[in-house]
Structure formats: structure tokens, C-alpha cells
Image 1 (tube, protein in one colour):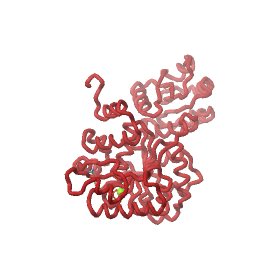
Image 2: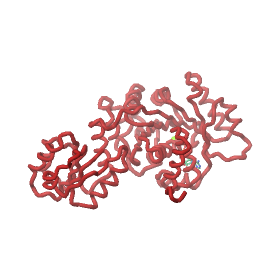
Image 3: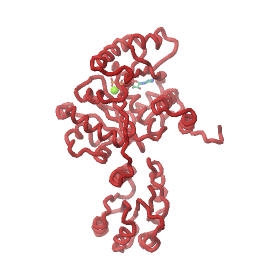
Image 4: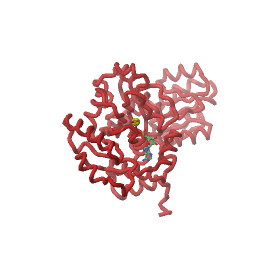
Length: 390
Ligand SMILES: Nc1ncnc2c1ncn2[C@@H]1O[C@H](COP(=O)(O)OP(=O)(O)OP(=O)(O)O)[C@@H](O)[C@H]1O
Ligand SMILES: [Mg+2]
């Protein structure tokens, strides 16, 4: 999205430029003006789609706001103010400027405003997102760790727009694996307000972990779960598919009516297990349930977590016992995984070259079906190598 930035503040300009360029699609500051008068007197020939106006240093020439709005009738506007300037706000509202953000800039608020603008202006194309469900065969298999970190990896490495939904009926904690923010809205809040459901509403309910990656937290009060109906899941996933490239589900061990509906419509189900007999036994039960539900075998792809070569049990034994293919193994990497979980920082961000981070990058390539040449650049992004260093 091509944007005009009106501000005297070069630091703010740089901050908005950095945040904007991290978005997908990027917000590019293609022109800048020093103030309202400068902007009105020197119109940008190639009309911007977005105008970001820093009104904190403006003298009270608010009539210029109307002129600016008329100058770019098709643009969306974001107004940045330091304190509530009432007259300006009234003028801006009348001129059709709806997004007002307080300075200093809160990045999350900026991205939320941009999300709303993109959806309203139709910049965000309707997507056809895929639903990928991670489900632990046994408690502690690592399904939440893998789902959250894989979601982050998809957004960070493959530049996909990703939503993670925590479907744990009780004690859902997916948000904490990758963020220190406290969710303000949860899955049960959305179900309670399902008539409001659209892309902007869904986006506003997420914990924004990184550009392109948001997490919808689990219901924190199990007593609220009664208000969540399978039909709600249909609505949420339908809207989510339109607005995200991938919807990653952290299903938790207890399958209930809600998570069952989500599994029904999942494109791929990844049962996560470790290569040990108790896991294989529980995995077998889970696969049997899926079979009895009529799920096609090719929708079910096993992920072996904490895999160590050379054990008594082989991957082939597991595949034979469960009658499903192992698509991926994730190495046992206690230090990196524990550090990441304890700090609530994605492992890719914390220990980029760790075995588990590399394995997640491989899984991204597998799922997005990137070719080798593109895959190479994925690794370069991950390990920060420039072309000259190769
Ligand atoms: N590849 C790995 N190497 C080392 N440790 C790991 C790995 N994957 C996950 N872990 C550790 O295993 C622990 C349990 O993982 P996680 O909470 O994701 O399991 P879960 O399957 O979601 O369990 P639950 O049934 O409680 O939902 C985490 O604390 C994490 O640090
Ligand atoms: Mg879990």
C-alpha cells in the first residue's frame, strides 16, 4: 500500500516506515511532507492509498484537514495525536478519517488499524486458507510447542498470514509459549459474540505475536465452554479461511464437540507423538477414532517429536503400528525448547540455528511446498546470510 507520511518527526517517520515494511502487503512510505500546510500545497502526483498524518505538532489550522481529505478522496487516513485534540478529532471524523492513534505509537495498535483499513479497502484479497490441526497423542508430546512455533515459522519464514487457535478446553496456554501479552479476548468471547464475526473482528481478538502471526487464546474459564457450539466453529473457520493463509489448531488432548467440528474440516491433521510405547498405544487409539469418524488416511500425517536416531523402536515400526505415515521428525533439543517455553519467545527468534529451529524451517518448506531454490532463501532468511556470503 503506497502511503504519504505527514510529520516533522524523522524518528516517527522511521518507526512507521519500519513497521509498515514488515507488513504483508507492505506499507511503503512513498512521499513525505513536513506538515498539513505543506501537504495541502504540494499534492503528491501519484495519489497515495494511505495518508498518515501526525497532528501532534500542528498549529490549529484544522480547516486544512478537510482540504487534505478532499485532495485524496480514495485514500484511507490514520491520524496520530499526542493528546486528545477535540476540535481536530471532530474535523477529522467529519472528513471521514476513522483511525486515530495516540502517540507514542503503540505498534500493535498501528497494525490493528492497518488490518481494519486493508479489510475495508479490499486490499486484503480473500484468501483460501488451509486448516492444519496439531493434536498430542499423549500429554506432553509437544503439540502446543510445535503448533505455536510452527505458526510463527510459517509467518516469519514463508511470509504467510497465520492464525493459531488454541482449542484446549481447559488450561489452554498456547499464547504463553510465544508471547508475554495477556489476551483480552478468547475463543469463548468470540462464540458469545458470533453475530459480530468478520475478518476485522477476528483480527482484533488476537494476541499479535509478530506481523502476520496472531493467536486466538483458549477460553480461560471452563464454565464458559457451555456457550461454545460446534456451529460457532464453522463460522470462525469460514471467516478465518478467507483472511489467513494458514489456520493452525492446537487441539489439546481432550476432543470435545467444538474441537471435533474443527478436526472435521481440517485439511491435514498432525498427531504429535514421541517414539515410545505408551505414545504409540495412545496414538493407535487416536488414529482408530479418526478412522471411525471416516477421516481419510492421507489427511493424517504423523510428527515424531523429540526424535533420537538409533533407538530400539524405528520409525517404520511406528508407521506399521499406526497405519499412517510419518511426515516429519523433530529432534530432541531440550535446552532450546525449554528456554523458548520459559521465556515465551518463539524458538526461531531465540535460537535461530538450533536443531529444533532448523527442523521447524524444514516443516515450513514441506507444508508450503517451496522448491529448492526458494527453500534456500528460506534458510538464508533464517540464518541471516547475505548473498555475498554464500
Ligand atoms: N523437540 C523438543 N525437544 C525438547 N523438548 C521439547 C521438544 N518439544 C517440546 N518439548 C518440551 O516438552 C514440553 C511439553 O510440550 P507441550 O506443552 O507442547 O506438550 P503438549 O503436547 O501440548 O501437552 P498437553 O497435553 O499438556 O497439551 C515443553 O515444555 C517443551 O519444552
Ligand atoms: Mg498442549
